Amino acid sequence: MGVQAVIFDWGGTLTPWHDLELADMWRAICSAHLPPDDVEKAAAALAEAELELARRGTDEHRSATLAEAFEMAGIEPTDAMLDSHFETWTPHTHTDPAVPGLFHALRGHGIKIGILSNTICTREWHERVFARDDVLGLLDGAVYSSEIPWTKPHADAFRAAMDAVGATDPGSCVFVGDRPYDDIHGAKSAGLRAVQIHHQTTHAFERPGLIPPDALIHDLGELLPHVERWI
Image (cartoon, rainbow, N blue to C red; front, side):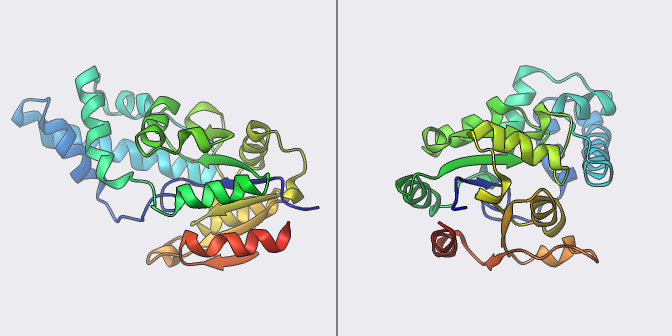
């Protein structure tokens, strides 16, 4: 069977896990562009909208976009506000330093590298991040849920990611993610192998009856030996 492709989750997998308050993030964004009296109301509405879209993704496996969050909150974003959104998130989007070496090692084995991320942000937003960190050129394909109808753990999301890297057999694909339900249970249910990267808040995403991963790691530096066992 071998390994044809390794597909990665993004946030909390290729980036360090950060515990964040969405209201604080939106407050920082809104305060640069809205009158002071409007900031708290707008930030609360945007945080509530984003949380509702996240709930919909988890419970109904339906995707969403940043534009939809703004629409739900009743706010028309300017280009400057969208730029502030990117900049406010920048400290939390830096690619793990282990990633370039890992990607080069996987490519050295002839393995395709893909991304499958549950996200409301656009492809352009994510590609700015990958280009900034000099890893965009190492990707063979990427799927962002903001561009498709589904979120992980829907099987069609995993199939879309396989299509993006040209993989045809789920049994020859490995998915690497941090969330037990969206990433691991979803990948295993779709027929892929799955490696879970464990961080300090993983337990918050546990639920009964989930399929366990094929391997558990604590940082990306531990991944390659597992993949090499399956080649």
